[in-house]
Amino acid sequence: MKTLLTLALLFGTFAANAQKEIWSHAIGNWRNGPVVYITELIQVTEAYTTPELLKIYKRDFAFPESVTDIDVLRFGTPEEGEESIRTLKAKYGMRKLEVEILEIPAPVGP
Image (cartoon, rainbow, N blue to C red; front, side):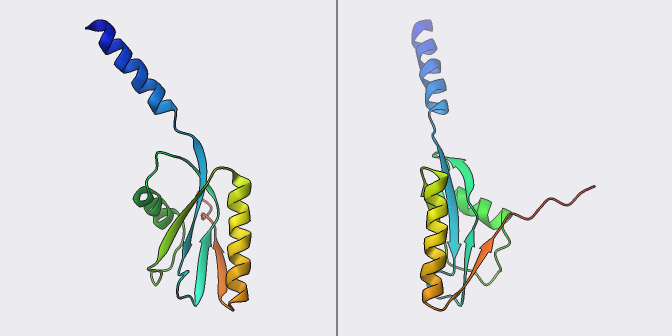
């Protein structure tokens, strides 16, 4: 029984550490504009669900209250994520929609 519990604990430890690092950004008002909001990339793990990522984006980025449609995108490398941001910015620019890149606000303090 001890051996079985030890093996279960060992496999649980490996499973917890097996989450790969990924990068993500969000895009808001992408269906109807008039301003499309794109966040900068954040680094997370595969364990984050879409609802969890949406909470992070709503908490850490200054999405206006008028933004009702937010989509989350995930990437295996930061280069893929940066390319996605450039591509989306160009795509919505061609459609004559204003694109605003949202950054995490700098911490305020002494």
